[in-house]
Length: 61
Length: 250
Image: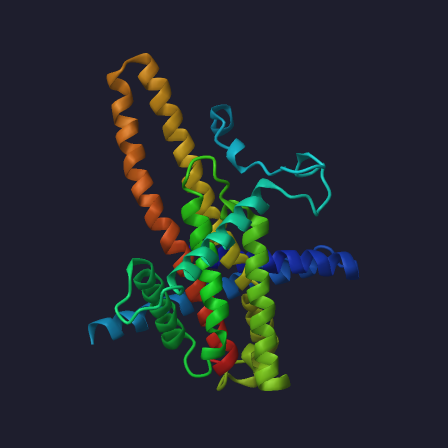
């Protein structure tokens, strides 16, 4: 569960770092993309939870 | 602390054939202990399936029954999770599952290198899945596969935020897939070494003192067999779910 939340943040941060190196805009795109990564992490957790809930309902019903 | 016990030596990759040396000293094509473990696992799976299908009988023998139940298990997984159009991918999913479960289980044998505890190996597996799934998605839907980044029914005004979020979430899949397997296998093997160290050290102090860590070690070994199977299952079922997303787009 935790790794699914953390990895989008890390990936967002790394893409931001790379964009900053490329465009010379340090640190703005890294900050922005880390925040978007946080949103992506929440979204992923939501999807995992929704999938687990669907499977539970299927099991009970 | 773990390193003074020597718990991390088991993850060292070294070359077995000339040019000899540690992982960072030898060229990329060197035959390492990790490569040997992968070769043994792959050949082991090949031998198991080959042996099972040699004397095919209507009433299956022991090996044939094992291979048939594994086949049915993976076939059911592909049917339930990939859905329609999943049949062509069955050989890939079956190979993936057998390779990982063989590596996880053989890795529990002392002195056998656990290649799934190497992030390079798990990330390569995850990257292959990522590239394959993305290719399948573009082959099936063409440029329409980009719609995966924008869920249907969302207001167009939030697209500038939603598309990067979905893209990051998509790109993070191979990272979480590989780190999950790598972390689970690494942690299990470190715990083995630490508990074994406690057993030896406390037995040296008082004979009775070693009993508690040894009992714990036995319990953890049983747990690790379960984790070895479970992590292979999770890795494979997530590959199936990603394939489902690529074929049916949610």
